[in-house]
Each structure stands twice: as structure tokens, then as C-alpha cells.
Length: 76
Image 1 (cartoon, rainbow, N blue to C red):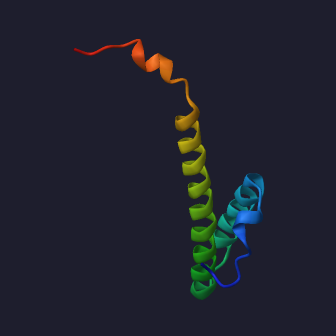
Image 2: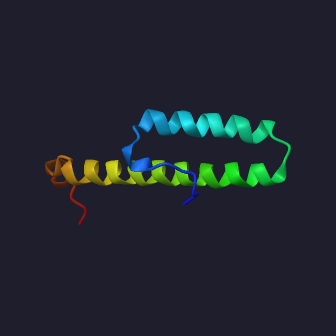
């Protein structure tokens, strides 16, 4: 985790997406390789948090799905 990154778990999904968009724009505008590396590190943290949230949402959806439909197709 980047030392300047805030606590990402307290942010809403829209805020994280906005940060990713903003940092991506800044990454391509900056010429300094050191600054680019720092922005890339921050981007990685935000993308990892978003990925973790999407994975948790998918797992929740799969756990709560209607499993009665699974019995409609029987493969012998």
C-alpha cells in the first residue's frame, strides 16, 4: 500500500472510480518518471480495492442466487 493512500475501505465505489480516472489522466500528463512510478503505485492500490469489492459482490450474488434453477437441467 502506498504510504500516501488514504483508507480505501471508507470510500464509496464512485469515489474510487473517480480517483482511478483522475490518477490515470495525471499519469499520462506527467513526464517525470519518479512521479509516474508513484502515481502507478497509487493506481495499483485503488484498482486492487475495486477488484476486491467486485469479487466480494460477485461471491455474495452467487451465494444468494436462486438455486432451484440448477435442478431444471439434469445431465445424465
